Image 1 (tube, helix red, strand yellow):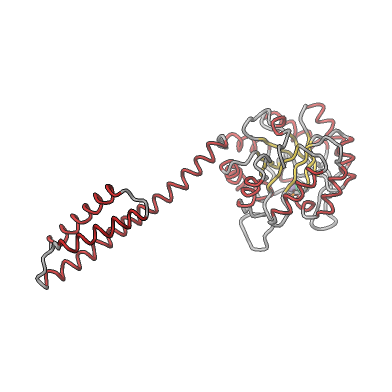
Image 2: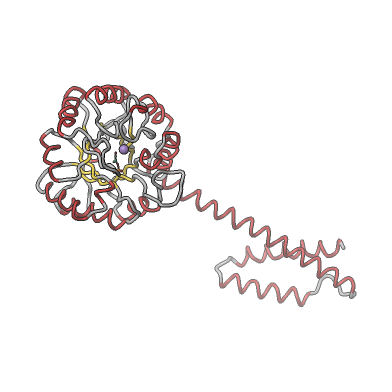
Length: 354
Ligand code: PEP
Ligand code: MN
């Protein structure tokens, strides 16, 4: 996939990253307006999100207000001049979302897992100018995620982004969906032009760890965030545990360290390499200490057997052999000779001290 267009168009407020926020679900016009007003007032959001069709794990739960909620959202869009994002899972959702002039369509994790569903959505978008955000599938299969992106690209969608929302795990974990960062990192390596947003809300499942995961996303060079926000999180009909008040979101965003990506990658690389150097240096020191201990043992043996400390033949052999080894491994002779002499001197001092 070549260039992904449109990202800059959405990030006018933050050149380095994009923020989409809003409630998990559109619950009422009052809830949407109150939340949107507070979020827009922060000056930090690039788009307002709200689910109008909710994919629920079990039946008989709140499944969204559908078209009625699209009307609320399109009124808010006009009044507040804010782009709107909703989840679409069926071609009819796309038709309705376009009818209400919705700007961004996101494909949920439960839809991305199904190539039939994704293809049906892609077919519905043929010839339509739309921005599509593809959440990762619920299970960690990068091919399936890329496959979904490819289906939209093949249908002519050029404004594509990925959303990392973590992966379901059967094992107990501190996360609702484990982040497995190696997967979005690999996605970035394979599709460097594709913006990746991170959704810490669905990764964490609870409020208190969202800031840390958001910071991690920024440290790893991700392109933006999707965070759920509700004016009264405790009353939320869906995902009540993980939604932040607009005030808390504002604070989180202020505390976030957003570095330029180039610098991030460089810093990451440098610190990784320095960690390796640190490890090698301590290994070198440990080896020197071990060597000196053996030297001391030899010293005691020489003493007991009346053998002189310095033996020129042995030393000649050591120098010749080590310099050859150094040459084979690309270590400069002058440097290695000096180092060996220093080590030899220290060894003789150890033995004469005895
Ligand atoms: C959501 O964004 O509210 C949602 C249902 O997300 P996901 O598809 O990631 O579970
Ligand atoms: Mn949600």
